[in-house]
Image 1 (tube, rainbow, N blue to C red):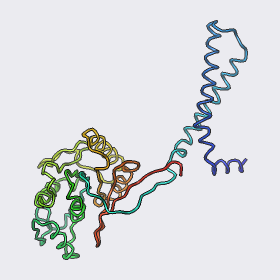
Image 2 (spheres, rainbow, N blue to C red):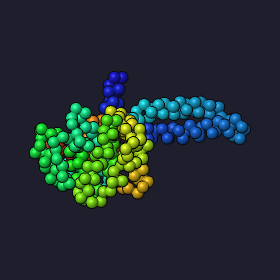
Image 3 (cartoon, one colour):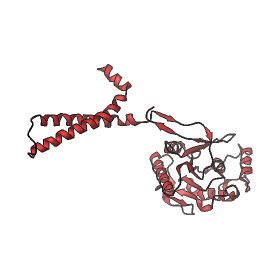
Image 4 (spheres, rainbow, N blue to C red):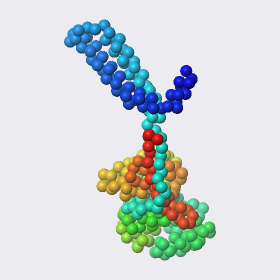
Length: 291
């Protein structure tokens, strides 16, 4: 008995047979027997003594096969392989979603800029200056600026996903993008928006809505909200290949959410290397249930 049980565990294809073949077949048999039993009850068909037994037996088999399908369906259809795709530099995308990290409350910042870091209106030059000033000055917004700068030729919208701590700072980040308007010729100020829990994107304002704040450790909240965002993008005519999720900022959970959200979608997620050469790497996840 244990040998049979071990074989069944190793060879999961029998569950596919039960789920995809036996279940509909026995269901069809049960439906036929039950129909004939009802017909005999109404006198529309000659009585047959075996109908009660065949109906009970086929019904029992149907319940058993349904139990197997439910019990093992999760294992049957789970991904057997996940291909992450080759590491490659992200192509410029029109729409980028950014998880905005909060600035360290122990630091000194002037409208979001570290004290002692003098910015110009040339983002490329300022990024080089940020590298030179390390490790004396480490700025968490350097990476999202690098990630967006990579898409500067095509970028038309930025969606900020903010934590409770970073939400009050979102206006400063948008002001930085305004400072570097020359680097983003297709990006208008009203195209830098906050993501709400409903998936709606709204312009950044002095008094942002309460549901524009996200718990970066709440996987389900993030996943549901980003799913709604993708649905609204689609309704607005935005193609999935034009959406990129930047998972560099925030916490580990949002990195997982960003990766899983793009599984078997035509959207991708990117990560900006925090050390030289500061490459912007795009990943494309594809899950295969067959293995």
